[in-house]
Picture 1: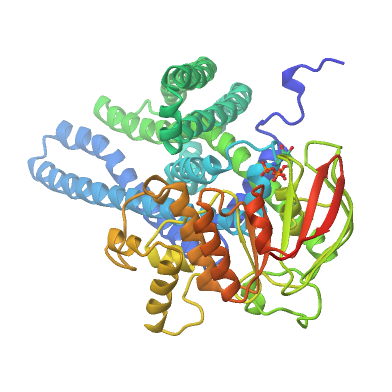
Picture 2 (picture 1 turned 180 degrees about the horizontal axis):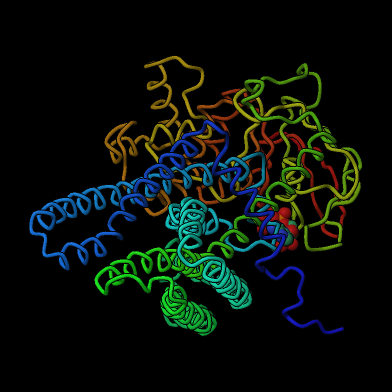
Length: 604
Ligand SMILES: Nc1ncnc2c1ncn2[C@@H]1O[C@H](COP(=O)(O)OP(=O)(O)OP(=O)(O)O)[C@@H](O)[C@H]1O
């Protein structure tokens, strides 16, 4: 049955789901009652109240000038001028302070929200699942960077107006009631109510278009990033023309959506401006009520002018308080859009995290080196890896890549995994690392990830940012074991063993900050050698090498394998080259269609 877009339950709206997501974000922005952000918000409230106090006094100045001038009182006039200047100076100082605190609040909120998202993103393997396997959430990077930034900016720009509104509205409502009675107050409240309902209707379609626009903005930026990262490969393909068309195409979709958003905002702007100007007329209608009712009949024209000026200030200010809230509609629609995007990301990350916790409980036995310092939890006679009737598929297919694989990997027995392209060699590692769920069967890893445990050299080398030392000790934060300067000598030795000592000269030393992108300055072979230097440095008991020598010559491959073995590592290699056989004892051959065979290898 066709459903209209407006009734799509998942469509971002200004609804109950928005409120839930917004409240969740607020608890992140204000983590506890005594947090820095709460203190800042409290200070903002005090400063904003002081501003209102001063604004009230400033608002009364014209009526005082009318009085003084109609009396031609020179002495009072001079005093009033001095008082006015003082008030204006105080007003500008307080308003600047208010702006300053709002800006600080923006930084505080951005820090809390981004760190909270990072906490979930980098917990376990959430970033992998989110980026590789979950297709329902677009551009998580953009949500954590640009969307959070814009949400916090918009909220901070609203903060002082929102924090002060209850106070100013109560105070000026009371004042308005004193002057005009019920009629004035009820008409202003009615005016605000109508304004809110109309704006709520106009904001509805804007929120979903804004969410769509942010998605396309992310896609456009991603395209540029793709070209930036792969500029060289693209240049070899002479890809400028086709990539130009594709990039422009993404840009065009973004512009179309932006135009749609602007069209929808037009109605909202018409609503806002109508209410702004209606408000100013309403204020005079309300003031006219007591005048026409004859309440001020006994006053002189000068006194009436002064009184009207004072009263109109109160009514106009109250209406202004409400119209300011209505003016926030565009900001509210932005906030709603960003809230949905960030809220959705939070929900998906929590969901992934929860599922992974359950999965980890089922496949207990694997842990990160942080928890147990990389020690192997078993005796060396236990197998490091046990697979029992393991079957798995790729995430998008029902077809088994491997069926009922049973295998044990013992220390000292080097295993080679071979098979045609796409038969599931790397996928086996994904299942071992719980990146993918097995279809059936049992996986057990006795070796922990890390030094003296098990380490992986993935097919695509991962190079972090930072100094050469940080590259070599990666993924550790600090040198391991903590041995001080002795470590320098180890790092240099292993760089030399990997054939990368020239890098020390290029970087200017182990701890020299480099401003280059490592992927741009190292050749694929050099990247693989650098990854071997890491492996030598960490000296795990088991090294899993996924086509880790594919960019090296056979002589270099031999050097790397010999060094690994000299350092006492048990090797599990994945690859196509027949030269790899000589370094291994057993070969697992994946034949495709779920078939596999184990073949003992003879030593030459
Ligand atoms: N993230 C993913 N989502 C969906 N399918 C995937 C994903 N990653 C890999 N696959 C598919 O799973 C199958 C096995 O991939 P895998 O990377 O294990 O192949 P491989 O044997 O290591 O190949 P190669 O020798 O080229 O490295 C392939 O058909 C691949 O297209």
